[in-house]
Image (cartoon, rainbow, N blue to C red; front, top):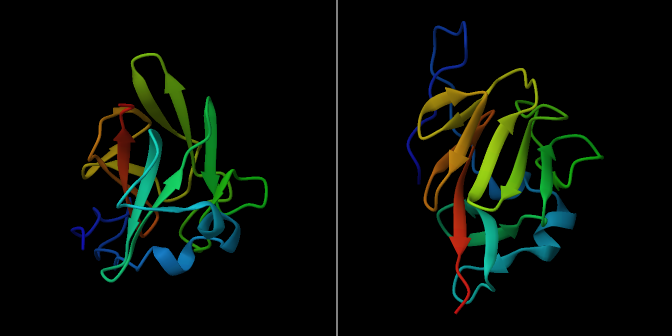
Length: 137
């Protein structure tokens, strides 16, 4: 399991990390793929210890949050309705914080925006995900 996320802004106590997989909406789980043979593309990996799944990101832009309008829904109160945006670019993927209450963290640092690389750890609220790129060929 991934390490604990940094404490929330203004918090005196570190926030407990939750298992992410149970908080991924049913709609997203239906489209998830196993880690064994993923198709080329961009994914957020969810690991709850017993199971690892890859959640595919949309081509172009993927909105991540708790709200019903999110492309990738995470059902946890620490995730904002509109938490983050992942934008595919020619040279990779960029994550942007969408004015979330608890912040967006990449590799332990709170960011407003950051370029992602394969293996980067992304924390949204109390949920820990790993950014994955699967190259073609």
